[in-house]
Each structure stands twice: as C-alpha cells, then as structure tokens.
Length: 287
View 1 (cartoon, rainbow, N blue to C red):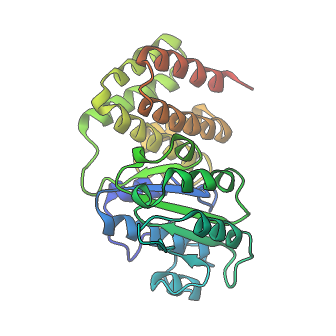
View 2: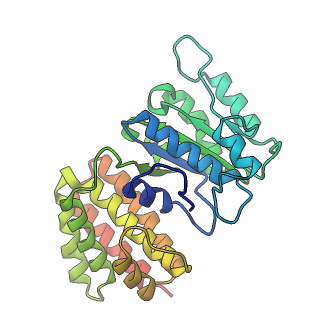
View 3: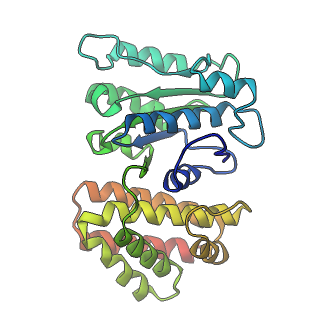
C-alpha cells in the first residue's frame, strides 16, 4: 500500500497494510475508532485503493484517485439516513442492495461507506444486509465506520474484517508481549508451548487487543510469504513465512478473527484456549 501523502501513524499503517492481499482488500471492512475524522480518512484511503488504476495503490494522481479524494466519484457512495430517526430504513437498505448489483460507472469497483454504522444500522437493517455481505457482487466493497464494533450484530461481525485504529491509543506493551508469545507458540513444534502461550488470553482486559496484534503479526507473515514487506514485526513475520505456506497463514488469520468474536460473546476462556490450540495445530499440520 502506498501511504505517501497520508498522515497516518505507524500503527494505522500497520492495520491498513494488514488488509492488503495480492492487491485486493476484503469485501467488507469495519473501521472502529473513537476519532471520527481518522476513521473517515482511513475509509477514503481504502476507497481510493479500491478504484485506483496504478500499480502503487492509491497513487493519488490518477483520475479515479482524484475523484475519490474529493468524494466526487460516481462509484463511491456515502449513504445518509433518509428518515427522521437518522437510521437506515429497510427501503433504503433494499435500494442500496439493488444498486450494488449494478456495474460500476467509471471504475472497476464500487464502494459503500457507512458512517456511524453502530448507531445508524438498526438490527433489522443489519439483518437485511447479511446475505449481501455473505455473497457480495464482484468488486463491491462495504466499509462500516463505528466507535464500537461490539454494538453490531455478531452475524455482521463474522462477515467483516474489523480494523481498530490505534492512532489515539497505541498498542500496549502488555498486548504486544502477549501477542508475541502466542505467535511463538504457533511457530513452535511443541503443542504444549502453544497451549501455554494462549493462557495469556485469560487477561480479559487485554485479550481483544492481544488478538488484534496477533493478527498484525500474522499479516506480516503473509506479506513476506508473497514477497512484499512486513510493516509491524519483520522478525516473527519472517519466521511465520518460513514455517508455513501462504494458505495456512490466511487460515490462521481467519481463525484469529473468529476467536476475537468468541471473546466478545464471553466464551469460557479455558474452552477458547483449548479450541484455539487445536485449530492452530490442525492448520499447522495439514497437508
């Protein structure tokens, strides 16, 4: 990803770079941040990335980038609630869903950015959205901005990639220490090392941030496995890329995302660590 011209700190760059997979980003992304302007800037960056025609995305120089930057692109929408309650109505959501199946006007992709999604998307509106998120049209992207992803339905969370911007709060030393222990446990050939490392998740105050950090390190491993640069932890990323295939690292990232959702559901931590250990090992050993 090309961050030239964007005033992002290193933690935000790492979070956004973790989304890059062979020049593509996930079709559904939740950006969680208490800083509304920071979230909007990240959404604009991803929108430009989606429509950019350059090899170094987003280039900020092509016509597609220029229109995206000034919010004047025909294929990038920022839907606003149309009713007095300032929430998205079912009728409005149905119109957005229909529109998503219409081919782009100018670019090779379409992007929908929902601001304040945790307040504006009612449970009914979210449920109407589920099938589209599960089976989206090709090259259509949905970006949901919110202060708290936990306010969204679990079914929505499970279909989206959650990015937590840390520009206002840096990754804590404890979360980083815990995450590195878990990744080292994943790399270790001894199952006991992995199970022991996962015990750090019993610190519920840091568990969510720990798993987000594990995901960043795994993304570094994925980046290095496909010949691009690590942005967060090159040393552990290199060990992951050496030890596992690209496909296995992708599965581990998805597993880590799923475990973060389970923690929000207040799952028994002993059950979670046992399950995680078994799943990480299954991925490691499969052919």
